[in-house]
Image (cartoon, rainbow, N blue to C red):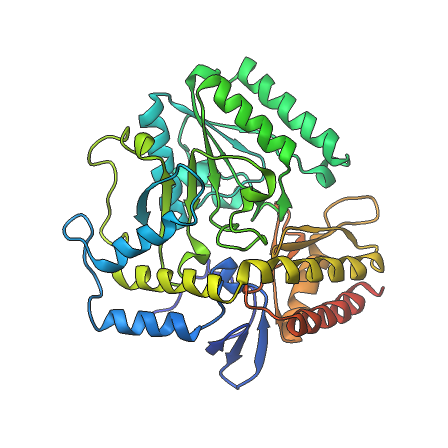
Length: 418
Protein backbone atom coordinates (compact mmCIF):
# COMPACT_ATOMS: atom_id res chain seq x y z
CA UNK A 1 0.00 0.00 0.00
CA UNK A 2 1.36 3.42 -0.96
CA UNK A 3 1.91 5.97 1.79
CA UNK A 4 3.01 9.58 2.05
CA UNK A 5 6.72 10.14 2.54
CA UNK A 6 7.72 9.85 6.21
CA UNK A 7 9.63 13.11 5.80
CA UNK A 8 6.34 15.03 5.57
CA UNK A 9 6.02 15.81 9.27
CA UNK A 10 2.57 17.11 10.16
CA UNK A 11 2.40 20.26 12.28
CA UNK A 12 -1.03 19.30 13.64
CA UNK A 13 -2.98 16.01 13.93
CA UNK A 14 -5.98 17.39 12.02
CA UNK A 15 -7.39 15.55 9.00
CA UNK A 16 -9.60 18.07 7.23
CA UNK A 17 -13.00 17.37 5.74
CA UNK A 18 -13.80 20.91 4.62
CA UNK A 19 -13.02 24.55 5.25
CA UNK A 20 -15.07 27.70 5.49
CA UNK A 21 -13.67 31.16 6.08
CA UNK A 22 -11.26 31.08 9.02
CA UNK A 23 -12.31 27.58 10.06
CA UNK A 24 -11.30 24.04 9.15
CA UNK A 25 -13.57 21.11 10.04
CA UNK A 26 -12.10 17.66 10.68
CA UNK A 27 -13.62 14.28 9.84
CA UNK A 28 -15.47 14.21 13.16
CA UNK A 29 -16.97 17.63 12.52
CA UNK A 30 -14.81 19.47 15.08
CA UNK A 31 -14.16 23.10 14.17
CA UNK A 32 -10.62 24.51 14.26
CA UNK A 33 -9.59 28.16 14.05
CA UNK A 34 -7.05 28.14 11.23
CA UNK A 35 -4.37 30.69 12.05
CA UNK A 36 -2.00 29.14 9.52
CA UNK A 37 -3.96 29.96 6.33
CA UNK A 38 -1.99 27.26 4.54
CA UNK A 39 1.19 29.20 5.40
CA UNK A 40 -0.29 32.50 4.31
CA UNK A 41 -2.00 31.18 1.17
CA UNK A 42 -5.75 31.26 1.83
CA UNK A 43 -5.87 35.03 2.05
CA UNK A 44 -9.62 35.26 1.41
CA UNK A 45 -10.35 32.37 3.77
CA UNK A 46 -11.24 28.81 2.91
CA UNK A 47 -13.58 28.43 -0.05
CA UNK A 48 -14.63 32.04 -0.39
CA UNK A 49 -17.83 31.88 -2.47
CA UNK A 50 -16.65 34.42 -5.03
CA UNK A 51 -13.36 32.60 -5.60
CA UNK A 52 -15.07 29.20 -5.73
CA UNK A 53 -17.60 30.46 -8.26
CA UNK A 54 -14.89 31.94 -10.48
CA UNK A 55 -12.90 28.70 -10.43
CA UNK A 56 -15.99 26.58 -11.11
CA UNK A 57 -16.99 28.71 -14.07
CA UNK A 58 -13.48 28.60 -15.51
CA UNK A 59 -13.20 24.81 -15.17
CA UNK A 60 -16.20 24.50 -17.46
CA UNK A 61 -14.52 26.66 -20.11
CA UNK A 62 -10.79 25.91 -20.09
CA UNK A 63 -8.63 24.15 -17.51
CA UNK A 64 -5.23 24.37 -19.17
CA UNK A 65 -4.10 26.59 -22.01
CA UNK A 66 -0.30 26.41 -22.11
CA UNK A 67 0.65 30.05 -22.22
CA UNK A 68 3.58 29.94 -24.60
CA UNK A 69 1.32 28.06 -27.03
CA UNK A 70 -1.96 29.98 -26.72
CA UNK A 71 -3.24 32.96 -24.75
CA UNK A 72 -6.40 32.84 -22.65
CA UNK A 73 -8.67 35.50 -21.20
CA UNK A 74 -7.98 34.92 -17.46
CA UNK A 75 -4.24 35.30 -18.04
CA UNK A 76 -4.66 38.57 -19.91
CA UNK A 77 -7.23 39.94 -17.47
CA UNK A 78 -5.12 39.04 -14.43
CA UNK A 79 -2.11 40.78 -15.95
CA UNK A 80 -4.20 43.89 -16.47
CA UNK A 81 -5.59 43.75 -12.91
CA UNK A 82 -2.16 43.27 -11.37
CA UNK A 83 -0.97 46.30 -13.28
CA UNK A 84 -3.33 48.34 -11.11
CA UNK A 85 -1.70 47.24 -7.84
CA UNK A 86 1.94 46.53 -8.67
CA UNK A 87 4.61 49.02 -7.55
CA UNK A 88 5.21 51.87 -9.96
CA UNK A 89 7.21 51.01 -13.04
CA UNK A 90 6.82 47.24 -12.69
CA UNK A 91 4.69 46.65 -15.77
CA UNK A 92 5.86 43.26 -17.04
CA UNK A 93 4.92 39.87 -15.56
CA UNK A 94 6.12 36.29 -15.84
CA UNK A 95 3.98 33.56 -14.25
CA UNK A 96 4.98 30.25 -12.71
CA UNK A 97 3.49 27.90 -10.11
CA UNK A 98 5.48 28.02 -6.87
CA UNK A 99 7.45 30.54 -4.87
CA UNK A 100 10.68 28.67 -5.58
CA UNK A 101 10.06 28.96 -9.31
CA UNK A 102 9.51 32.70 -8.96
CA UNK A 103 12.77 33.05 -7.03
CA UNK A 104 14.70 31.13 -9.67
CA UNK A 105 13.12 33.17 -12.46
CA UNK A 106 14.20 36.38 -10.72
CA UNK A 107 17.67 34.97 -10.18
CA UNK A 108 17.95 34.11 -13.86
CA UNK A 109 16.68 37.52 -14.91
CA UNK A 110 19.04 39.32 -12.52
CA UNK A 111 22.12 37.52 -13.75
CA UNK A 112 21.23 37.82 -17.42
CA UNK A 113 20.22 41.47 -17.21
CA UNK A 114 23.38 42.57 -15.38
CA UNK A 115 25.83 40.02 -16.76
CA UNK A 116 27.04 39.56 -13.18
CA UNK A 117 27.40 36.22 -11.35
CA UNK A 118 26.73 36.96 -7.69
CA UNK A 119 23.67 37.64 -5.54
CA UNK A 120 23.45 38.68 -1.90
CA UNK A 121 20.78 37.31 0.42
CA UNK A 122 20.18 38.10 4.08
CA UNK A 123 20.53 35.97 7.18
CA UNK A 124 17.26 34.27 8.07
CA UNK A 125 15.68 34.63 4.65
CA UNK A 126 13.60 31.88 3.08
CA UNK A 127 13.37 31.69 -0.70
CA UNK A 128 12.46 28.06 -1.42
CA UNK A 129 13.53 24.42 -1.61
CA UNK A 130 14.76 23.92 -5.17
CA UNK A 131 18.55 23.86 -5.39
CA UNK A 132 19.14 27.50 -6.32
CA UNK A 133 16.40 28.76 -3.99
CA UNK A 134 17.62 26.52 -1.16
CA UNK A 135 21.13 27.88 -1.65
CA UNK A 136 19.65 31.34 -1.15
CA UNK A 137 17.76 30.25 1.98
CA UNK A 138 19.35 30.80 5.38
CA UNK A 139 16.39 30.42 7.73
CA UNK A 140 17.47 26.88 8.58
CA UNK A 141 19.97 24.28 7.40
CA UNK A 142 17.14 21.74 7.02
CA UNK A 143 16.37 23.30 3.65
CA UNK A 144 19.81 22.80 2.14
CA UNK A 145 21.59 20.09 4.15
CA UNK A 146 22.59 16.96 2.29
CA UNK A 147 22.06 18.26 -1.25
CA UNK A 148 25.42 19.90 -1.80
CA UNK A 149 27.40 21.09 -3.52
CA UNK A 150 25.07 24.06 -3.59
CA UNK A 151 24.98 26.75 -6.25
CA UNK A 152 27.92 29.12 -6.33
CA UNK A 153 27.68 32.90 -6.34
CA UNK A 154 25.39 33.32 -3.32
CA UNK A 155 26.66 35.43 -0.42
CA UNK A 156 24.98 36.15 2.90
CA UNK A 157 24.80 39.44 4.80
CA UNK A 158 23.17 40.11 8.20
CA UNK A 159 19.50 41.07 8.60
CA UNK A 160 18.65 43.57 11.40
CA UNK A 161 17.20 40.94 13.75
CA UNK A 162 17.57 43.04 16.88
CA UNK A 163 16.24 40.51 19.40
CA UNK A 164 18.66 37.84 18.21
CA UNK A 165 21.64 40.15 18.66
CA UNK A 166 20.40 41.58 21.95
CA UNK A 167 20.50 45.12 20.54
CA UNK A 168 18.02 47.87 19.75
CA UNK A 169 16.84 48.08 16.14
CA UNK A 170 19.00 51.07 15.22
CA UNK A 171 22.16 49.31 16.40
CA UNK A 172 21.21 46.12 14.57
CA UNK A 173 20.50 48.06 11.39
CA UNK A 174 23.80 49.93 11.44
CA UNK A 175 25.59 46.64 12.03
CA UNK A 176 23.79 44.94 9.13
CA UNK A 177 24.62 47.72 6.66
CA UNK A 178 28.20 47.99 7.87
CA UNK A 179 28.67 44.24 7.42
CA UNK A 180 27.16 44.46 3.94
CA UNK A 181 29.79 47.03 3.02
CA UNK A 182 32.46 44.78 4.55
CA UNK A 183 31.16 41.89 2.44
CA UNK A 184 31.65 44.09 -0.64
CA UNK A 185 35.25 44.71 0.38
CA UNK A 186 36.18 41.15 1.31
CA UNK A 187 34.06 38.57 -0.53
CA UNK A 188 31.65 39.88 -3.15
CA UNK A 189 32.71 42.86 -5.26
CA UNK A 190 29.86 45.24 -6.06
CA UNK A 191 30.61 45.17 -9.78
CA UNK A 192 30.15 41.39 -9.73
CA UNK A 193 26.87 41.54 -7.76
CA UNK A 194 23.67 41.17 -9.75
CA UNK A 195 21.04 41.56 -7.03
CA UNK A 196 19.98 41.74 -3.43
CA UNK A 197 17.15 39.34 -2.51
CA UNK A 198 15.31 40.40 0.65
CA UNK A 199 12.00 39.75 2.44
CA UNK A 200 10.19 42.77 3.95
CA UNK A 201 9.43 40.48 6.89
CA UNK A 202 11.47 37.35 7.47
CA UNK A 203 8.96 34.51 7.12
CA UNK A 204 10.45 31.15 8.01
CA UNK A 205 13.24 33.13 9.67
CA UNK A 206 11.00 34.15 12.57
CA UNK A 207 8.53 36.87 11.49
CA UNK A 208 11.09 39.66 11.85
CA UNK A 209 10.12 42.91 10.07
CA UNK A 210 12.72 44.91 8.20
CA UNK A 211 12.78 48.68 8.69
CA UNK A 212 12.97 51.83 6.61
CA UNK A 213 16.62 52.61 7.31
CA UNK A 214 17.74 49.12 6.35
CA UNK A 215 15.81 48.94 3.08
CA UNK A 216 16.79 52.50 2.20
CA UNK A 217 20.39 51.43 2.73
CA UNK A 218 19.93 48.55 0.32
CA UNK A 219 18.27 50.81 -2.26
CA UNK A 220 21.07 53.37 -2.04
CA UNK A 221 23.78 50.73 -2.46
CA UNK A 222 21.87 49.10 -5.29
CA UNK A 223 21.63 52.41 -7.13
CA UNK A 224 25.26 53.29 -6.48
CA UNK A 225 26.62 49.97 -7.75
CA UNK A 226 24.11 49.03 -10.46
CA UNK A 227 22.67 46.19 -8.38
CA UNK A 228 19.03 45.09 -8.66
CA UNK A 229 16.83 45.12 -5.55
CA UNK A 230 14.59 42.05 -5.55
CA UNK A 231 11.86 42.12 -2.90
CA UNK A 232 10.40 38.73 -2.02
CA UNK A 233 6.72 39.45 -1.36
CA UNK A 234 5.69 35.80 -1.57
CA UNK A 235 4.43 35.71 2.02
CA UNK A 236 3.99 39.45 2.65
CA UNK A 237 2.09 40.54 -0.46
CA UNK A 238 -1.59 41.05 -1.24
CA UNK A 239 -2.52 42.83 1.98
CA UNK A 240 -0.99 40.41 4.46
CA UNK A 241 0.96 43.10 6.34
CA UNK A 242 -1.83 45.68 6.48
CA UNK A 243 -0.60 47.41 3.32
CA UNK A 244 -0.88 45.91 -0.12
CA UNK A 245 2.85 45.15 -0.28
CA UNK A 246 5.11 44.56 2.69
CA UNK A 247 7.69 46.98 1.33
CA UNK A 248 5.04 49.75 1.31
CA UNK A 249 5.68 50.13 5.04
CA UNK A 250 9.27 51.12 4.35
CA UNK A 251 9.03 53.54 1.42
CA UNK A 252 11.32 51.59 -0.90
CA UNK A 253 11.04 50.95 -4.64
CA UNK A 254 12.07 47.47 -5.82
CA UNK A 255 13.37 46.52 -9.26
CA UNK A 256 11.75 43.08 -9.14
CA UNK A 257 8.90 41.81 -6.96
CA UNK A 258 8.20 38.13 -6.30
CA UNK A 259 4.58 37.03 -5.83
CA UNK A 260 2.81 33.77 -4.90
CA UNK A 261 0.91 32.42 -1.83
CA UNK A 262 -2.03 34.79 -1.23
CA UNK A 263 -2.33 35.67 -4.92
CA UNK A 264 -4.89 32.99 -5.79
CA UNK A 265 -6.46 31.92 -2.47
CA UNK A 266 -4.98 28.42 -2.59
CA UNK A 267 -4.65 27.73 -6.31
CA UNK A 268 -1.01 27.33 -7.40
CA UNK A 269 0.21 30.52 -9.03
CA UNK A 270 3.36 32.61 -8.68
CA UNK A 271 5.25 35.17 -10.67
CA UNK A 272 7.76 37.95 -10.94
CA UNK A 273 7.13 41.56 -11.89
CA UNK A 274 9.70 43.94 -13.34
CA UNK A 275 9.81 46.80 -15.79
CA UNK A 276 9.42 46.03 -19.48
CA UNK A 277 12.94 47.35 -20.01
CA UNK A 278 14.46 45.05 -17.41
CA UNK A 279 12.43 41.99 -18.39
CA UNK A 280 13.51 42.41 -22.02
CA UNK A 281 17.12 41.86 -20.96
CA UNK A 282 16.45 38.21 -20.15
CA UNK A 283 17.64 35.77 -22.79
CA UNK A 284 15.09 34.48 -25.31
CA UNK A 285 13.66 31.16 -24.14
CA UNK A 286 14.75 31.68 -20.55
CA UNK A 287 11.16 32.05 -19.32
CA UNK A 288 8.47 29.44 -19.71
CA UNK A 289 6.93 26.36 -18.13
CA UNK A 290 4.15 23.88 -18.72
CA UNK A 291 1.68 24.97 -16.05
CA UNK A 292 2.56 28.63 -15.48
CA UNK A 293 -0.40 30.99 -15.71
CA UNK A 294 -2.93 28.16 -15.43
CA UNK A 295 -6.38 29.33 -16.51
CA UNK A 296 -8.21 28.20 -13.36
CA UNK A 297 -5.53 29.66 -11.09
CA UNK A 298 -5.68 32.96 -12.98
CA UNK A 299 -9.48 33.08 -12.64
CA UNK A 300 -9.13 32.44 -8.90
CA UNK A 301 -6.51 35.18 -8.66
CA UNK A 302 -8.77 37.71 -10.39
CA UNK A 303 -11.55 36.83 -7.95
CA UNK A 304 -9.10 37.09 -5.04
CA UNK A 305 -8.12 40.62 -6.06
CA UNK A 306 -11.81 41.53 -6.30
CA UNK A 307 -12.52 40.18 -2.80
CA UNK A 308 -9.51 41.98 -1.34
CA UNK A 309 -10.78 45.25 -2.77
CA UNK A 310 -14.53 44.81 -2.22
CA UNK A 311 -14.23 43.57 1.36
CA UNK A 312 -11.47 46.03 2.34
CA UNK A 313 -9.20 43.20 3.39
CA UNK A 314 -6.02 45.28 3.41
CA UNK A 315 -7.59 47.61 5.97
CA UNK A 316 -8.96 44.64 7.89
CA UNK A 317 -5.50 43.08 8.01
CA UNK A 318 -4.11 46.30 9.49
CA UNK A 319 -6.84 46.58 12.14
CA UNK A 320 -6.96 42.91 13.10
CA UNK A 321 -3.18 42.76 12.97
CA UNK A 322 -2.91 45.52 15.58
CA UNK A 323 -5.47 43.70 17.72
CA UNK A 324 -3.60 40.40 17.41
CA UNK A 325 -0.18 41.92 18.07
CA UNK A 326 -1.37 43.86 21.11
CA UNK A 327 -3.20 40.85 22.50
CA UNK A 328 -0.23 38.56 22.02
CA UNK A 329 1.99 41.09 23.77
CA UNK A 330 -0.36 41.24 26.75
CA UNK A 331 0.00 37.46 27.06
CA UNK A 332 3.77 37.70 26.67
CA UNK A 333 3.97 40.31 29.45
CA UNK A 334 2.66 37.65 31.83
CA UNK A 335 4.96 34.96 30.43
CA UNK A 336 8.72 35.12 31.05
CA UNK A 337 9.20 32.32 28.51
CA UNK A 338 8.14 34.62 25.66
CA UNK A 339 11.03 36.96 25.00
CA UNK A 340 9.50 39.01 22.23
CA UNK A 341 6.30 39.39 20.22
CA UNK A 342 6.69 41.09 16.84
CA UNK A 343 5.07 41.30 13.46
CA UNK A 344 3.38 43.39 10.81
CA UNK A 345 -0.30 43.13 9.99
CA UNK A 346 -1.50 39.55 10.13
CA UNK A 347 2.00 38.17 10.57
CA UNK A 348 2.57 37.85 14.32
CA UNK A 349 5.30 35.79 15.99
CA UNK A 350 5.94 34.98 19.66
CA UNK A 351 9.56 34.00 20.32
CA UNK A 352 10.18 31.65 23.25
CA UNK A 353 13.45 32.00 25.14
CA UNK A 354 15.01 30.55 28.29
CA UNK A 355 15.86 32.67 31.31
CA UNK A 356 19.37 33.27 29.95
CA UNK A 357 18.09 34.31 26.52
CA UNK A 358 18.68 31.07 24.63
CA UNK A 359 16.08 29.71 22.19
CA UNK A 360 13.43 27.67 24.00
CA UNK A 361 12.30 25.30 21.27
CA UNK A 362 10.62 22.67 23.50
CA UNK A 363 8.26 25.19 25.09
CA UNK A 364 7.37 26.74 21.73
CA UNK A 365 6.64 23.32 20.29
CA UNK A 366 4.59 22.32 23.32
CA UNK A 367 2.52 25.50 23.09
CA UNK A 368 1.88 25.01 19.37
CA UNK A 369 0.79 21.41 19.89
CA UNK A 370 -1.40 22.27 22.88
CA UNK A 371 -3.07 25.01 20.84
CA UNK A 372 -3.91 22.50 18.11
CA UNK A 373 -5.58 20.23 20.66
CA UNK A 374 -7.59 23.23 21.87
CA UNK A 375 -8.87 24.07 18.39
CA UNK A 376 -6.35 26.74 17.35
CA UNK A 377 -4.02 25.80 14.49
CA UNK A 378 -0.64 27.52 14.56
CA UNK A 379 2.84 26.93 13.15
CA UNK A 380 6.39 27.45 14.37
CA UNK A 381 9.24 29.11 12.53
CA UNK A 382 12.69 30.60 13.10
CA UNK A 383 16.10 28.94 12.78
CA UNK A 384 15.50 27.16 16.11
CA UNK A 385 11.75 26.69 15.49
CA UNK A 386 11.13 28.57 18.74
CA UNK A 387 8.79 31.19 17.28
CA UNK A 388 5.07 30.43 17.24
CA UNK A 389 3.47 32.29 14.35
CA UNK A 390 -0.06 33.46 13.77
CA UNK A 391 -1.02 34.02 10.13
CA UNK A 392 -4.84 33.96 9.83
CA UNK A 393 -6.78 34.66 6.63
CA UNK A 394 -7.34 38.34 5.87
CA UNK A 395 -11.08 37.87 6.43
CA UNK A 396 -10.58 37.20 10.15
CA UNK A 397 -12.96 39.13 12.42
CA UNK A 398 -12.36 40.87 15.74
CA UNK A 399 -14.33 38.14 17.50
CA UNK A 400 -12.22 35.41 15.92
CA UNK A 401 -9.03 37.18 16.94
CA UNK A 402 -10.37 37.40 20.49
CA UNK A 403 -11.19 33.68 20.42
CA UNK A 404 -7.68 32.85 19.22
CA UNK A 405 -6.08 35.05 21.89
CA UNK A 406 -8.21 33.45 24.58
CA UNK A 407 -7.10 29.96 23.54
CA UNK A 408 -3.50 31.10 23.15
CA UNK A 409 -3.47 32.70 26.59
CA UNK A 410 -4.84 29.55 28.24
CA UNK A 411 -2.40 27.34 26.36
CA UNK A 412 0.64 29.46 27.20
CA UNK A 413 -0.35 29.59 30.88
CA UNK A 414 -0.80 25.81 31.04
CA UNK A 415 2.44 25.01 29.22
CA UNK A 416 4.66 27.50 31.03
CA UNK A 417 2.93 27.59 34.41
CA UNK A 418 2.72 31.37 34.17
